[in-house]
Picture 1 (cartoon, rainbow, N blue to C red):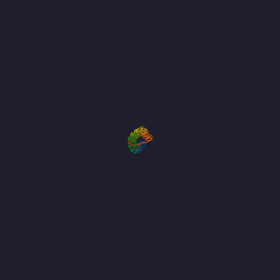
Picture 2 (cartoon, helix red, strand yellow; picture 1 turned 45 degrees about the horizontal axis):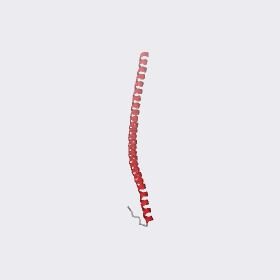
Picture 3 (cartoon, one colour; picture 1 turned 30 degrees about the vertical axis):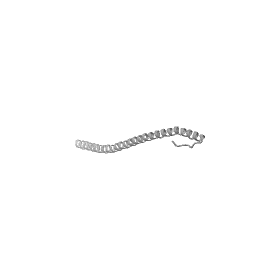
Picture 4 (cartoon, rainbow, N blue to C red; picture 1 turned 90 degrees about the vertical axis):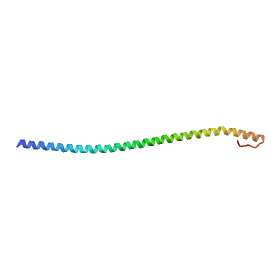
Length: 101
């Protein structure tokens, strides 16, 4: 009788451990699934941010190129302008009409 009772208790302990292990494995699978979704979301976010950074770099390069061109144009314009003013001043001093070059 004690042997039967001990055997029954051990079977219940074994069944409880098996049930606990199955529950733990199920929860572990759910956690892994959630972590997989989070990881995928982070990968997508990283790719999106990478694209934004590349687009920003392209925009800055495009803008910098055009600013340089504008600065060159302004420099050329400023260097050409005093020469035209000097010519106009000379013509007025002589009494002639300034002509556009």
